[in-house]
Length: 353
Ligand code: NAP
Ligand code: ZN
Image 1 (tube, rainbow, N blue to C red):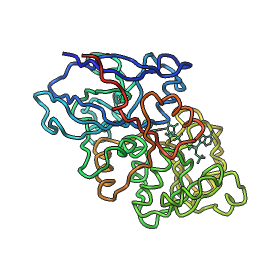
Image 2: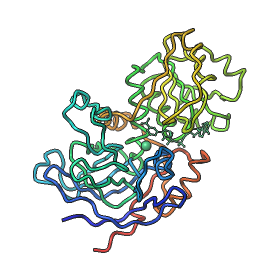
Image 3: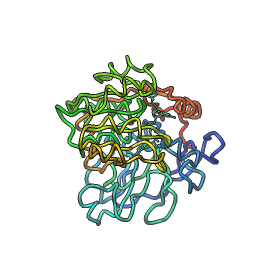
């Protein structure tokens, strides 16, 4: 039997999100059904609702930073039991057979991973719907365990903002002695700061103004560099091993590439799509690299959750009701969020049985 549920959906790129009643797929033998407790609000939800990346078919239920409680399991589920606290991030499936899936890099699946929303179920071809809803059904391989002691009300943003910044920090071997820059202090940016600090790095926030300086220091950063101050930017030249760029729009890398030391890397996790024309001169002068990185694999996401529980690293969250989502989108667009909205799903009425 399909599970009737309710949520909030985008129906059109130009209209506000509105209530949506729909069904979750029938439980398969390896599926977990959960009640969603909390869902973070990612800038990707906003990009998708507005069709910034094209190719949408509406309605779309966004949300891929999901914390829930298991309410039923299929007969072949071995890792989870009813009542467990679980989490789901940006993917709900992949082929699980290619070399990348075997390495635990399901986000790089050769067949493409299945998005938590705006994807198509690999078996039924039904559209996938995300966490701005009361319930979710997902195969157990894409379900994560919330470690005991991790605050459920704050953990949701780890599932996207957390893993998307943790993965490049680990890929580029961040640790004590690493000099890390973070461009843009928003949802992803503030997690990059907390995680880089947790890994022992020296951390600099690169923000458009000095307005967030006190916040940056409170988050654990060593300093804030105003990216609109050419003198301060010039003084910071050659000072970084890794720069994580979280800016959500097309922009120029020219101000940032000279900040990398020889062999340093600027990794883009923010803008998806075209960037301003790239000037290779500062790249070849310092053998500097530009890279990009998508989310992270399931194994690495579990490692992140365990790392955060051990180190007591949690996002800074502002809890909202589901019916405040449109206002939250507008505020996120103005960078007026400190530093992640999280929807309390108890604020959404249960579906009529
Ligand atoms: P966010 O909370 O809105 O933060 C973005 C930050 O970038 C802002 O706080 C602001 O920081 C800066 N910024 C905003 N508008 C800007 C502009 N016009 N020019 C320059 N800087 C600007 O967004 P988020 O949730 O962190 O997401 C950031 C981006 O990452 C989005 O595009 C999202 O789609 C993408 N994303 C990618 C992945 C992936 O797998 N790679 C995963 C999740 C999200 P300051 O005020 O400090 O300058
Ligand atoms: Zn996201």
